[in-house]
Length: 369
Image (cartoon, rainbow, N blue to C red; front, side, top):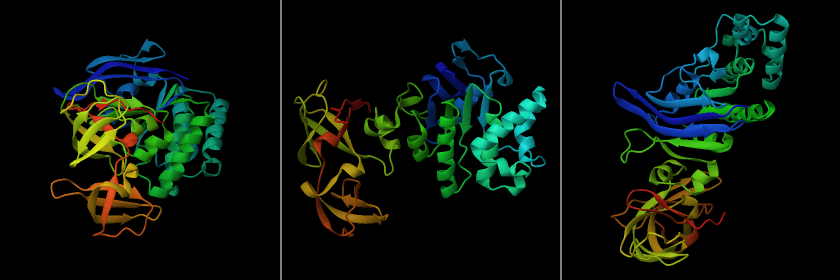
């Protein structure tokens, strides 16, 4: 198990910033997921760790040793790419064994490593086949097996499931989670654009934002456990990104920063938010956020017209328009009787409201979880 430490990492291409002041620690044995919008530098950061790119500034360390100038082949890392990168003329066995053969390992050691990886990934019956005779999920497992046999310090995954269909993604996601357990909690760093993968696989989620995002600062918008990012976004960027549908955001004004429940005016009505009042002043403009599942339909001081209903079986996404000046709110409900055109009351429970200041930073909520 290996600790990966990034300090003040910058990356630019021809003076165009890609990554800015990335400070991050991936603990030994941790499953860390990089997520963010297209162009935020997720894969670039992974390639820096692998040694396929050189940082413009900052340091990368494995177990305390700086590796900025260590060749990729000498870092003892294994990378699994999005496009499998298998040799089409070679069998599954030969694809997995090739790197070990190049290193000159004895045949008995190669056979043992390939057999162990094949057992973990359930590839035993496929070792004689060539990639063209495999499904997409099987090919991805071969690519993962090729990484396993190297017995690396850290596994690096660059969107390994993006070429698979939905059912195969779900199946392979479970296999990767099981792999992490079977390999005695090997350190893994994983890039994805899929929030489900991030939420279900990660011990630590690192949310990256584009370097050109207004406000400057680090490319790391927030890092923490999956549920911490979801329930306690540190800023408006994290609030907008995490969750599908996204968090509802509304302008508000502070009426009274009382201890335990800050009084606000939102959409012409008074409400309370369960946030710490420190630093808030009466009359201060803020932004409040509330997750779709936390909006209570059927009671409350606000009323709105249902303008769209997305019936998804286990629940519905109800789009409610309060007035012509405000964008529709999205509420999540299990009530299948809601219809377009209905006029419904709704409420924002105080303990579920997020509050962001004018700079977009979250005001600390009173944690109830």
